[in-house]
Length: 142
Image (tube, rainbow, N blue to C red):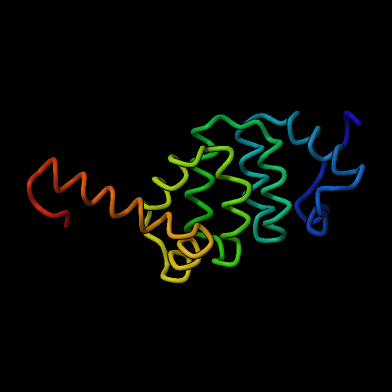
């Protein structure tokens, strides 16, 4: 097991439920944090669902989870939104997840799907932040 090495291509068809997936999670944990992040980024376009399963097991620092989330909001496909909510929101916490999503410049489909699958949370956070800016400055946000 110590000499096991996985490539994104080897894990492209995994679901996260097989016995071999335990080995992949253990292997990923054995990597230094920057290598874990790089591996997850490379796996993302091949199998975003499995990438998010591994992200939950990767035990990354909160800051790195936030950076990956931002990265995937920009580079990911809007069809990944439901899984992002399901897997990343518990890692970051509800408030932090939606605050990050509301602060990022998103494609129209990504924004629409986030708002739809989030049951309007994205718009609620954006409205709340706009109201806070208005209250603090006395003028509407740009």
